[in-house]
Structures are given as structure tokens and as C-alpha cells.
Image 1: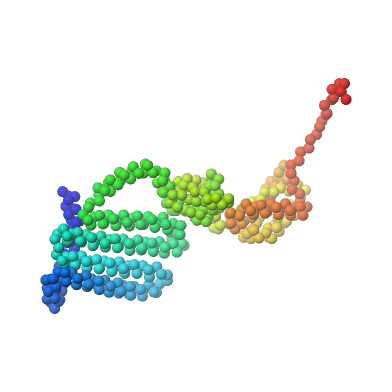
Image 2 (image 1 turned 60 degrees about the vertical axis):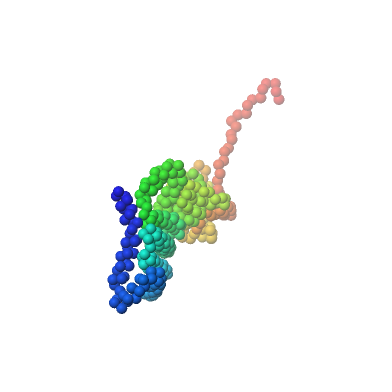
Length: 387
């Protein structure tokens, strides 16, 4: 009984509102207009047309005033966000006033109860859909505006807009449909309970898909990498991030092969982001050894001079030469330098090895290698009687 009472109350809400507004309009009319109103009441269709025409004119005037007054305020601010926002709000104001006039026109026609209720529900449905579309445009506009201020809103940027846009659309459409169903006198509580049971079944059936979906949201929120970053996974994959989607992440490897990795794997993987940190630069290390007879200061100066003339290397931070240990047959050292792009690491390392080898030959610096001498202590004696 309580459900039926709440349903009936929901069904009659729009009718009660329209009747009350219609009554308030009649009671607030000036004395000079009352005779005209009474003459129009004798012809319901003419009264309904007059109400619709008046509602249209009032809606247009309100829209114009709203845009003009707030447009002057928007013209004094930087950017176009408020300009577009006020245009959408002005259209929403027009829709509300015009659809209210349609409800009043239906009330003036004095249809039967069933026809009156159906028409008012239909008009309320159109109003809800119109406002839903306006709200979707506003949220999209807000997300785009936030993404242009990356220093303030780090979570909302170009790569996160699609996911946030989908989320807001789901919430707005879901809330709008809930109100829409309620306006037609249907209690959606039972539907929601059924949807919960179905959701549990779907969750078990599509647990991998849902794991990728939630992992995608966590990746966006945690932001361990972004589009364009060069990353290395603990499984060995290395490449540039070309796409971060709801289900998967795509890497373009140095072989120009695109690898698609599920977000659930990315969420649990150890990721080395070579483009992370204060800049995108990355450091390369070239291991080399020189003989014990070499002048180490001379070796250091030769490598540093080579680094200054090499255009592939960054001047800031400066390249470095570090002698690491006394090896078996050489003094081991590392030449360390920074490069601009992580994906160029292999190519620049190749060039540096060739350059150092050539330069050491020209400067007379020996790069030792392991040598093994074989000493024969005694030749085996030849068998007796043989030559």
C-alpha cells in the first residue's frame, strides 16, 4: 500500500504543480486583464495557444536578458569558458520556461484525467531530456577547461578526459533516467534490485574485463606514466606509450611493433619510466677499460673533450668519467652522459663505442683484452722403436 501511495504521488506531481501555477496566474492577474482572461477561458484552445505564445515570448526575452547581462561579465574575463557556459545556461533557461508554458497550456485545455496525465508526463520527459543534454555539454566544457590548466588540475588532462567524460556521462544519464522513470509513475527500486543481482552474475562472468576496467581508472588516477613516456616493464617490454585506454595500454617498441598490454597486468607490473622525473632526459653508461700503463688523467681529458664536441649528448647535466675498479687486465671506467630522448639510447651508445675505439687508437691509449699464454712443460716421449 505504501508503494502504491508513493507511486500515485509521483504520478500526480506534475499535474499538481501545473494546477497550482495556473491558479496562481489567474489570481495574480490585474483587474484590467481579468475580462480578457475570462473570455479566453470560454475557448480553451485559444487560451492554450495564447499561453504557449506568451511562454515562447517570455522564454526568448529571458534568454536574451540572461545572455546580455552575463555576457558583459564574461567579456571582462580571460578565456572563453564562461562565454560558452552562459550560452548553454541561457538555452536551459529557455527550455524550462517554454516547457512550463506547455504544461500550463495542457492544464487550460482541461482534458480527461488520463489524457491530461499522459500529455504532462510527455512534456516533463522532453524537459528532462533537454536538461540532460545541456548538463552533458556543461560537464564536457568543464573538463576541457580544467585540462587547459594542467598546473592546477593534474588529474584532468588530455589523456584522462575520455575516461572522466565517460564516467560523468554514465552518472548524468543514469540520474536522468531514474527521474524520467519516476515521472511516469514507475518505481525503479525493484529494477535496481534486479540489476544488482544481474550485476553480480555479470561480474563473475567478466571478472577479467572488469579487472582491466578498474585498473585503467587506477592508472589514470595514480599516473605512473602518460602518453609519450618511454617505459620498461619487468617482463622486458620496452617502448613508448601511444595509448592509455580503459581496457589496455599500447607500447610502440623500437622495432616499430605495437604491443597491447592489459591494464590489469600494467597495474601489477614493476614499471621503469625513463621519461619520468624532472625531465625526459636519460643517462647512458659506456663501460671501457684501459691498460695499467695508461695516463689516467690523459684518458679522462680525452673522453671529456670528445663529449664536448658530441652533439648527441646534453651539456646539462655535464658528461662524467668515473674510474671504477682495478680489473684483471685493465683499469675499468665508465663514461656517463645524458641524452634528450630515451628511445635514442641504443643508437647513441653504438656511436659512442665506435667513437671511443677510434679515438683511443689515435691517442695511443690501449684497450687491453684477456691474454692467455700456454706453456708446455714437457713433450711426451716418443714410443720405442718409432722415429
